[in-house]
Amino acid sequence: MNENDIQLLDTIKKYLQKYLDRQDVPTKPPIKLLDTLAYYFIQSNDLEGLQLIINVHKLDYKDFVQKGEYKHYLIDYYSTLNQLDKSFDIINNYFKANNQVHYMIKLSIKKLITSVVCNRSEATLVNLIKHVKTFSTNTKDYYPLLILWKNLYMSEWHSDHMEAKDLFLLYPPLQVYVSIICVHISIELLNKKKVQAVEGLLEYFLDIKNRSGPEEKYKKQCVLLLRLLFDYQCLSRNLRACTEIVKTSYELNLPLTENQHVQFFNVLLKKPVEKKLITPLHKTIYPLKF
Image (tube, rainbow, N blue to C red; front, side, top):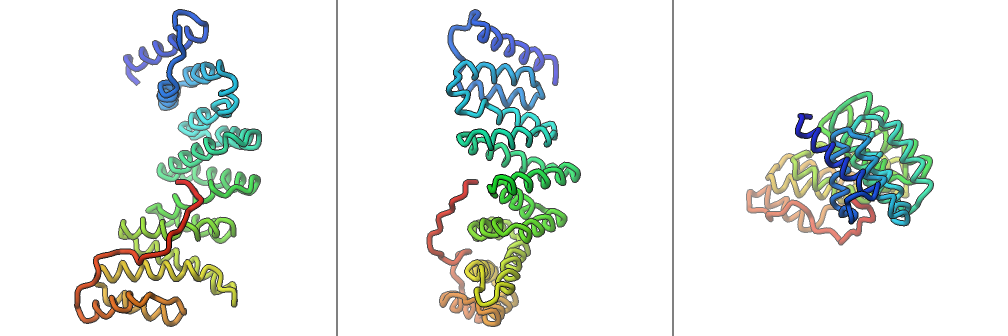
């Protein structure tokens, strides 16, 4: 941080302090400005300035309480310093104490998880996984665990994929949530040409289906993922891959659509195929926010 930045921070803090002291500042700064300044202080690792922002909000005590005393600022502050223990102390305390702040806290957890996984600090990642598992187990809220799983699975690192697989196998509620968004995630992956990742996701659900006996749990997800893979390979005119998928479809009783069989013969006979990636599916409403 250069001298000009330091002077700017000092000027802002003096302004905020004057408002708190009711000196020369007649009106409260706009909420959006306070929010912008808060994250400026967070990025500057300036806890004093951040606390001034929180104190300004505290003057409107009803709103202050409804917004969870703006503890999400402190969660983000400690997260930027990789002080996950402090972040999760706040998360655990205020998640239990105030139902109205759950959404804001989850947004902070989402940012925290994304940041840690992207930054690739092995020790910090291990600590994060421990905290998220504890949080989801204690609160029975598996949204943070789902966000963690997704970030690990979408990662470029094999070790992250193994962590994602362990989480998936360990938590049946996570399996349910992944089953809801598996098509959406697979489309993301295929658009990035990550075919093996989609195949891995299919293997996840096939393993559970095969172990569930006559119930054939998650067979629907297996069918949808296999169809997605077929459409992708068909569009790529990969005859060998298409043939393997058709064979797998018959062997595992995971039916392709009639149109996909037509497209397979088009690939086989070197005729034009439909310019699409995804087989039309019934509309699915996702109860999870990303």
